[in-house]
Image 1 (cartoon, rainbow, N blue to C red):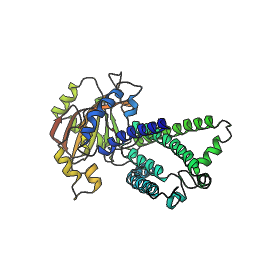
Image 2 (image 1 turned 90 degrees about the vertical axis):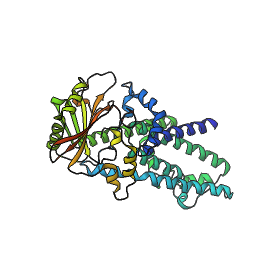
Image 3 (image 1 turned 60 degrees about the vertical axis):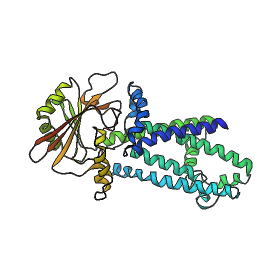
Image 4 (image 1 turned 45 degrees about the vertical axis):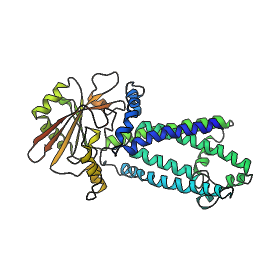
Length: 381
């Protein structure tokens, strides 16, 4: 019993730390998080076997894609506040019943599902996952979901021992989702396996395969539906934060690279490949690409005159910022263009240039060797 509680607690703590990365990224507290989180991410990035865990499977820095399906998936972010509210509401119902010594709870939502508090907690985790879709978070989310399933089963055995009538409640009430679709699918695909332990292990492996296969599929679909262009002679791959034509991307990059400081700085990096991001001049997530002025960042994030979209992704105008970063991959000095969007690469910031689209003039170049959080792996798209 103690081991199960400790295991559950450990998974929750680890997952909470990973979740905090997604929640705190948009706040000044991100640097404090990375002060102890960075060594772990840096260690992960050193090996080709683990570097992929720091990659992202869904868009974050890009404002939108050309896929309606992906945009609908993006709305899963709202599950975070819904999940948090639901978790506390139903947890309160349970603990209030304990306080009043009412015995088992089977009213309100508990009439339809046995563990709404766990369901809503996982919903909150799913919301954070799609807000900050790092593969590492997906791993922890999957582990957390499995642990909570078995924790719920363990708690049910205790409840049956204390309240025999709970067994009837189990028979008539779904575990997490009304109608018990999970249980029905389990019986359909794995119900004929005589050994239940083996059936559950196979189910877990199958579920994990579906989850990670789906994540990789989402990643490829996202890449296929954002504005990207390759400039082979410059060893540069270009991504636009807002949707634009390939001609627009190439024009912006060639104008920026024509500036003497930009050209010289990129040349000094040696035989490397670059990734460049074209973004609005007031892009709210510039910290992913360079160090930023915290005061200006805070003012934009809390500017009531701007929509949430404008605060985060900025608004298009005749001026843009163009960020350049060199590509780093464990055990590989030069990363070809066709591998820049691989899951084991990270960006090492080089410079950010301000370009006036009307005149074609670069009017400011900021050299940098790290982003706001050091050189921790940041989302590429």
